[in-house]
Amino acid sequence: EFRRVLFRSVSQSRYNFTNEERSELQRIMGSYTADVLKTLISSQDYKNATDEEKAQMIESVNKKGYDLAKEEIVKARSK
Image 1 (cartoon, rainbow, N blue to C red):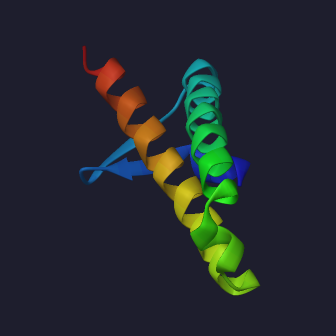
Image 2: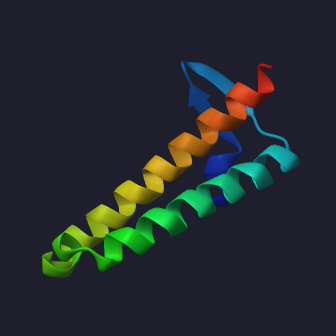
């Protein structure tokens, strides 16, 4: 998983994130996913889901967290 942070395509442009940017990306992603997962895991939908559905829900939250963090880093870079 660490490797995928090094190069990512955003709007068809490739970015080589610095160590500082990778750290910030991981911080943002971790904060987002912790908040959302806390709410998700306590929800009735999650409790009633199959293990496969739960895994898909968690994967979706992780992907969204990564995408939001990546977008924030790229926006900060362009300022």
